[in-house]
Amino acid sequence: MRKMVFALCFGNRGFMPGELILGAREEMVKAVTGLGYDYIMMDEGATRFGAVETRDEGLKYAKWLKEHEGQYDGVIFCMPIFVDENGAINALQDAGVPILMQAYPDEIGKMDFKHRRDAYCGKFSVTDVFSQYKVPFTVLKPHVVHPLTLEFSQNLRDFAAICRVVNGMKRFNLGCIGARTTAFKTVRFDEITLQKYGINVESFDLSELIMKVKEMDDNAPGVGDKLNKLRDYADFSQVPRENALTLAKVGVVIDEYIRDYHLDAIALRCWNEMETYLRVSPCVLLGALNDMGIAASCEIDVCSAVTMRAMQLASQEPATVLDWNNNYGQDEDKVVLFHCGPVARSLMKENGTVTEHKMFAKNDPGSGWGTNEGRMAAFPMTYSNCKTEEGKLTVYVSEGEMTDDPIEDGYFGCAGVAAIDNLQDKLIRLARGGFKHHTSVGKGHMRGVLHEAFTTYLGYDLVEID
Image 1 (cartoon, one colour):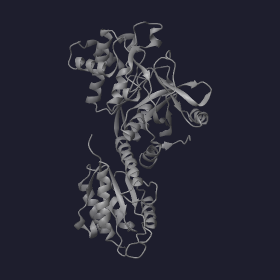
Image 2: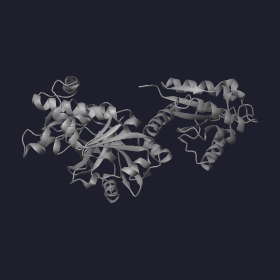
Image 3: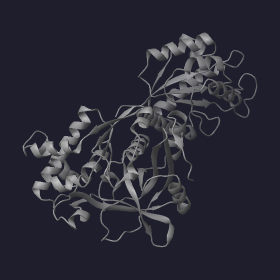
Image 4: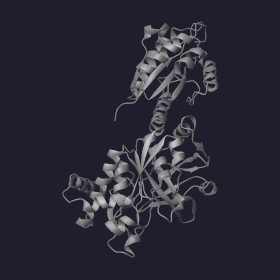
């Protein structure tokens, strides 16, 4: 994974102590590289102190930025002093990436004219003009912050996550493998609405996948390697060899779709044709894809795949899709989140065991090998999902905790107990909001990051459920 790169931009204003900009250039570079990121920065000699003040200096920076287009993930606009908003907007109105507004604090004992910065005030003049020009930007707490502080380090980590989400979501390809299962109207979606937001859906007929698998030789290229990887990924000791080979072949076909159509996410029709005609359930394949960075949802839940991808980009960890499945005894703020077995291994307590899908085994024994059974690990979690309705992509985001609370051994599939404050009120809002019985779950608390990315830059409608 390549280092993230930030373009650094510094503001200036003639009657302020511009010499402070030179120190800011050094300190910002130290802050960025100290967290493992990289940077590009206009030469100090290109303008006075290497900063932008006048309209012409802003245009010079914009030209320099255009010459480096594609080389940076976001821009950090540093205000060491009260800066000129005209140079700033000329410099960054066409940046095309998220912009972090950072302003230096003043220091008690250094409030004379030689040292006083006034960036606390100046930050408002810049954000006001950017708002007038409809140029999106990010502001984080505290209002003013020195680059070499723990507070700014957290700001920078959050901004990096925002950049990953925005740049990864504003244009990507999602593979829809199979039609919606007739009984599941809950996972309906509007493909044209998704395209409006830069999400391109590529559709594949499930019959083609089944045909490709049935025609594939056991020794076909990639099958043996895929089978070995699956056996390393989960406990396949119970799976008959023929079914394990079939799972490997399904994995090879899905990998071909991902490669040939440059897919970043997929939603798969997982039942009941695969079980009927191939005698497998593809759950473990979906979990493995999520661990490889491809957001993969089951039940043709395209909307869950969208929010899974966003959380993967934000956290750099896999996400999964789970059912709001069971109450947890009498605790109204806990819920059992479950799915048959598509959970990424890195979200589980330990390696799962690949079993026969109990729902299908009930009436058709031997038809559903591929569920990866286990238990969710305990971790701080974010949950989210979206819907497409009347041309809008509407999303909710909230946080909770996956706990260590036990789930009895006889409980089928992969599940965990989530603790969520005011859960009952939130469930009412989800029900009245027309959201589905699935929720996407990611590792870590990233509500603020996703809110910023979704609303400031991507233009999603946000429903507050907290």
